[in-house]
Amino acid sequence: MYDRSTREQTLALVRQGRSLNSVSKQTGISRYAIRSWQTRIEPLPRATQCPRCEPEPRPPAAPGAYAYLLGLYLGDGCLSKQPRNRGYALRIACADAWPGLIVACREAVKTVRPRNSVCIIQREGCVMVTSYSHHWPCLFPQHGPGKKHERRIALEPWQQEIVDAHPWEFLRGLIHSDGCRITNWATRRVGGVRKRYEYPRYFFTNMSADIIRLYTDTLDKVGVEWRPARQARKAENISVAKRSSVALMDQHIGPKY
Image (cartoon, rainbow, N blue to C red):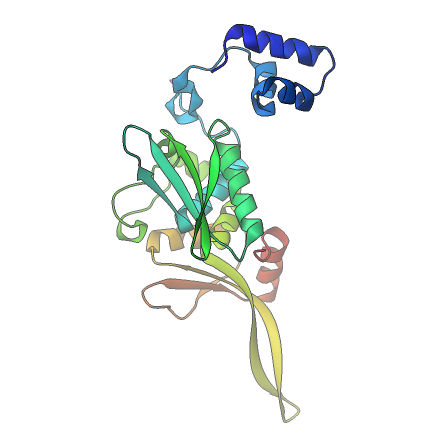
């Protein structure tokens, strides 16, 4: 925490026409902190650092990034209580095979909680995009004991409003966590000759009936046709294969990278 004098001296350097980058290098203060001081030089009270903890709770300031992060959390995310009153750790598992997903996940976490650092913890075959905060349960009230598919998962009204306003970001987060876009193939006879043809389709697989319902309800709202595919073990598998619906998904989501 920087005192008022340091903040004023830093802003004075910026007012001289210096770039945020040069002032940051000279003072050792992050560009984000300097930029925030230009809007408000006094620090926010701790309680208002979380939009859900304010006297009048409000949604996150970046609803699109939050909708995407919510999808990632419901798919491959978890919250865990930390010892010694260190708050909670948000962890999103991202496969090493998708470096673009790792970057997008990290950016979403930082956008939703800009005051908190984000780190990458390497695991076998994947990384855990991790951030610590006392307020993650405020933003993800679906947190609770046990596995997500073993308890009820329902969105709070304020979360549903965000998903309704940003359905594609929410779907993108779900697909990036527990979904994929693949090229399927089949054969059929044409003029007496059996020919092979290929076509793209999307799959989403999750063991929670509630999360599946959130996914399919949102698909319905954006006009994507879907159907249940063959179940994989105990998980429900949802397929989007109709050409017009796949084209719509490609327009807004596309394959992981």
